[in-house]
Length: 199
Image (cartoon, rainbow, N blue to C red; front, side, top):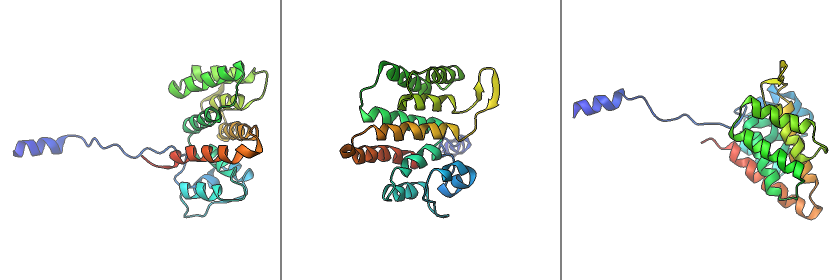
């Protein structure tokens, strides 16, 4: 019996630490570290406010679209791109063949996030015939980290991917008729809320 107890104590702790999808623990830290987000939003987080509370405050504000912008900047690039992909997919709009191809490249990268898939999505977006929500999302994949191009090791500025994700989701929203826009925005924010819960 004592041996069993000793063996149990010597086993490494298998409990995994909570995983966060966010760049920073609080929105206040995000705004301090990434001043670009303050340039594109009117509201400011309180010093003690947590991310989910701030998201909900933005949702209830006179400019609920800022909840989209906050999510694009607050989440880690891969998670923010996954969220953007879900928003575009949830929108259910008819997409061109070119947009469907870009969405496939984005989906492939979210599953297999290697450099080759990242550059493939970025190249397709750069040569896309139209600047659509899917184009912006594929550009976000290209700007999600690493070198800016295969022959240029210069790192991508941290604000470029969130800016492209924000453009993708907000332009998708702008393509909605006025009657359905608030419903679509609510769906986007509901999907975003899952990123702000620690598992």
